[in-house]
Amino acid sequence: MTRKSRRLHPEDLELWGRVAKSARPLKSELMKAFDTPDVMEQVFTPEPTTARPKAARSGSAILRPSPATPPVMHDLVRPLSDALAGAPVSMDKRKFQRMTRGKLQPDARIDLHGMTLAQAHAALNGFILRAQAQGLRLVLVITGKGKSVEDDGPIPRRRGALKHDVPQWLRMAPLAGAVLELREAHLRHGGSGAYYVYLRKAR
Image 1 (cartoon, rainbow, N blue to C red):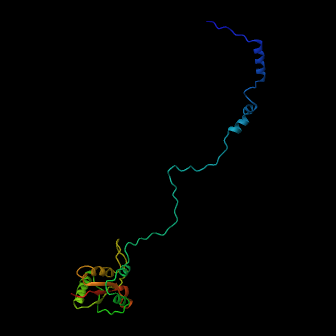
Image 2: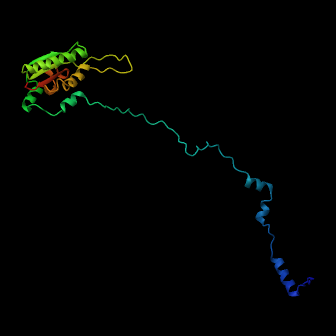
């Protein structure tokens, strides 16, 4: 099958001529301007930039020193004086007030100064049991406040071992049943270096 050649009519030729005259080239004046080397270098040459530090990787944190804060001290053991002062009163309240004000004179006293813990424990047991058997009510136990000692090991030694151990001994057998009240002594009777021990009546 042969393809027939198609000829343009005179009217088509005239129309095509008008379109060709009104058409403009694709390269505009702006595009011509970019053809010059100076303009191309000015447009596409990147401006110099100052070096910046590399950004930290995601997830990494910059550690900055925090302002100094005082260390938090945790006092896990309640002071012995506060514990005794906060204990409920077991004896007659009027006598209790007179005793804590130093107006009751102790019936007997024992001084545990210079004894080892074992010696002091044995001496205290005998003293309290004898005092109760004799019908005494208020006795004074002198322990002292304890001396400051220089720690010579990894475990610090407690100051005033007798002062801290005597209240525990008085609450243990065989003395727990004999003791009705335990308080720190008034200043006239030794203050925090001694204890008032108010005894129960012997049965």
